[in-house]
Amino acid sequence: MPQSWNIPFFPSEHEPMSAGLLLVANMLFCLSYMMRDMAYLRVITIVAAFFTLPYFYFQIDSLYSALGWPMIFIVIAFIVINAFNLTVLLLQRRAVSLDQRQSWLHQHTFQMLSPREMLKILQPSVIRRCEAGETLVRQGEQPNRLILILDGAVHVHTSDTERATLRSGDFVGEMSFITGKPSSADVVASEPLDYLIWRRGDLESIYKRMPHLKDAMQSIIGADMARKLAR
Image (cartoon, rainbow, N blue to C red; front, side, top):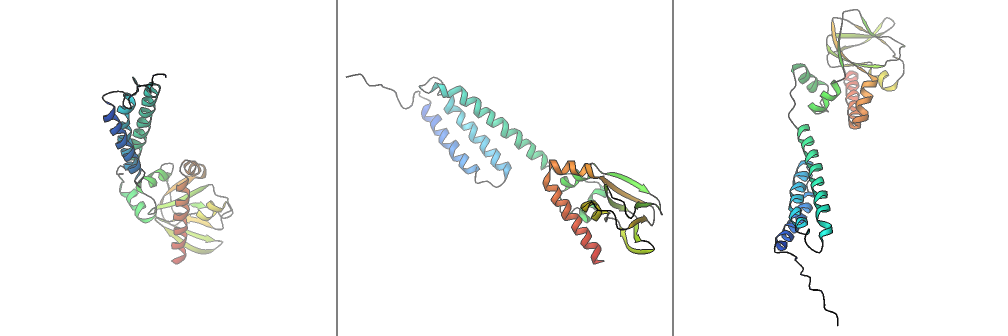
């Protein structure tokens, strides 16, 4: 009768401890999946992954040596990837410093965005200035830009009829910008005016990278139009 193999379940004296750490690691993995906050999830999974390393290390000289080094490299790569994404996440959560004008815009126009998201939207915009009597939008033209008044006021009129007065915090030409249809009115500065201007292509570039900002901007513009109608 052939002699049976006498292979211990724990091939080394360190195996019970490493197996215990593996059990703790799996419990931590389960706990991490219960976290709603992505930062906590990544921290716990990183700690759990570290706890698996002793188990795979002590497999190197055992019957299961083929699993040793490959699994160690996989776990280290897993830790590095999660650590990188955790760092990015924490950097994104840092407090954002806004100057006086940016704070005003966040309070009056971009309330639906976080300060960081607002800065991403403002990044490609350009501040322009015009004098009283200058035309910002002409009736019948197809706008390729979105305007937001910073300081000053404009009159919106068709022919000789004044339809509205827009002031700081109001968008100009937003309906034509969204629909792509020609403007239905002239918009003329009634006093010296500072305003922001976005090119369509610049905003579309942001929307491609962060699609949720497109929905947020449409909601912001919709709220702006509702405020104008309520005046």
